[in-house]
Length: 352
Image 1 (cartoon, rainbow, N blue to C red):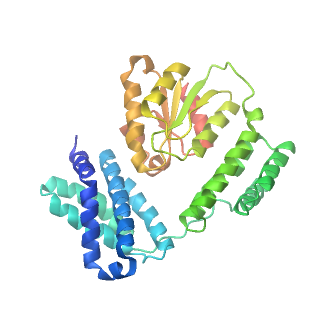
Image 2: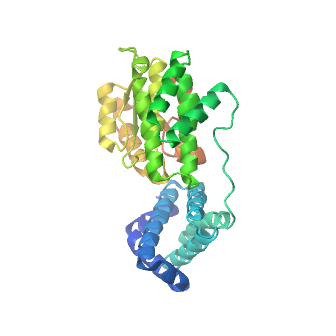
Image 3: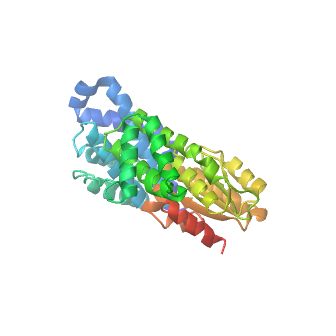
């Protein structure tokens, strides 16, 4: 265990205490917050403090400061959306830095803490940059995707289904529907939620409708059985964002694979047991957030410890791997895919 990992373990044990201390000190330094938000504001701040610490712990366990930097920039946009000053998070993280340096006295520990916090503090001292839309293309598929998104935002499930089924009836391949409509629309829904233009309920509705439309297409996706290429796909324990991996599994079915998709929040041992039962050649795992890397790594460790599963290839995906591709080697996976289309190519390459 290196210094950063040792600090992460100590932080993990004392997360609640540090969260309490941070909020109390912050409200003492900024009494206007107490007048404005009161005890309810403190409760929310303690919740935020736990999130900050959990992400810091996850980043330190992997030894990748870029993961916490990305989290800080992502969080800054959320806070700006609810009306907080753009530099509020910078002040908050700076106070966290002060608090932790008071608690850790070894120079190596202090250097580790600052190496993770300082880049994030510097990055969130500026206004967030605008995020480009994922639906700015000019092709017919791009226009269909934009129309599909609007039907979702209008709450019109019937029109959403008709738009996709009519496109398929007119000859659009299922793969194009997935990659040209579903995937960019999901990216755009995430962007709009992050900017505060969609509520959580709206985001959930849009995603649920797309999953329902996908299920309507399943008779055209699952058309074969008894194929030699076998893959298990799962979102690890605690990860509820499943639609991206579900799209990967469906597209691999279209490509001739026999897939077993387990869905969201799957227990660690359940994933390994399914790989054994299905005699899978590849295990595809998704981690949406940095703190999902812990259970994902545990799955890989269990798999690697079993001699009977020594030849199973592990394909990973999710935001942490986009931010820090070197995580693939660090957690002993075989490859990563940045999107659904890439996952198909890489899965086939892994089988040689």
